[in-house]
Image 1 (cartoon, each protein chain N blue to C red):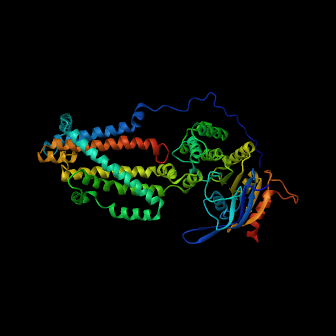
Image 2 (cartoon, rainbow over the protein chains, first blue to last red; image 1 turned 90 degrees about the horizontal axis):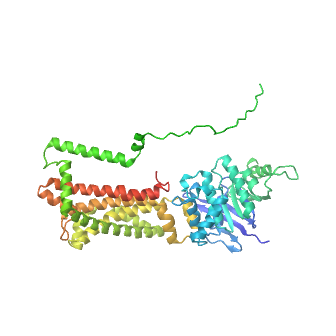
Image 3 (cartoon, rainbow over the protein chains, first blue to last red; image 1 turned 90 degrees about the vertical axis):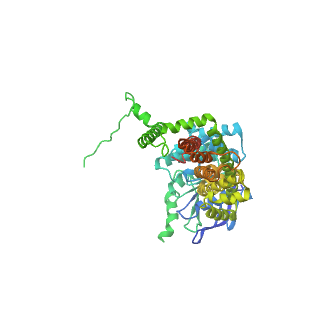
Length: 251
Length: 284
């Protein structure tokens, strides 16, 4: 089966005011349809930068990113982002209007159809009572749910999630993870999910890419069933991931 | 260490009284901003009346009631409405032209680096320059008439609106920018659907300050150069009655300027603010 998204030998650099930073070095991986592909790594390993490159906001200096065989040239509504920040909803639009905005701005749907689709996804993320609320009146978890609803309404080829639950409290975070898995069971979308939390990666991922510290390079790529099972040698997945992430520092 | 048993309680809200108590009448009235402001205005008018009566010199400081009487008789005779209408028409022409030019300038500055530099240099040069100082020159260029006044009005509005709008565009969070790009907005859509609403708090500030600048400039221009094209505006009304020592009329003219300022600030801009930035939670 040919992959939906292929990242091949991608090196990413960005310029700060003082220096040129190499965020990732020759990273390669493939994401298949209906994968829950998690990129796991310590902070500063360039995982968010990879996601932005897949989103088309940054161009790789080396290597190639292809979606369904076509090279990624710039941002587009076939790869929809869910950011970590709570300010990703347009403050001047209600929850429903935010979703309608996404649908109409991209030219996907218009008029009553867009509104219906918006209400449909709002119900899916349990925000029906808040469809007419402005973002500043919502809690952090509700804002993230609305952002996920907006992304899902687009039915993109691939959902790009940049630590969407990182700024939430532990209880809300755990519930949101549960809800995300449920949504995935219903629609089997493809998602590329960036996190620095081992437990989140184990719980959400079907396949986990482990990156080393800066510049980010592929350390490993492992499978996960979501239940943190022990492998043949009796080691739990989370313990293996922990070793993969930290052994280089101990050595 | 003694072993402690676990405790589990059943929590129920049945039988609880309502936990909310309505506010008293005084608190409800005091919470209303319009009531508070009206009370303050009445207090100020009373202070005015009291001081003028104590002074007892209507040439220096007429009483509040004689000013109001003069105001009503001038409105009744049609003299004041004509002057105010003349001033406001001119003001709107200059203001709209200034805002449109500011929009063009800012658009140019947003999409080209050279435009941004140009805007920075021009606002740096012209923003501190009082528009009224340009009037003598404008009179030479455009002659005695609306043209020269509109020119100085544009100068009064353009730079401050452009500066605030551009600063607002720059302050929009990178996340919102990426959201706009992510959903595939074109340049025009990006400007109208992300940049302008996102920068609306500072655009509104620019519009307000520009409005005040234009108002002052226009009244000053009329005071100095008076009848520019046959009929006079509010500034000329004030100047003329001062010459005739009709001080209550002078106060009535000033009061009109103040009332119009209050009207625009508290009704027009306030309503826009309540319906946009406050409702969106971008301003508390």
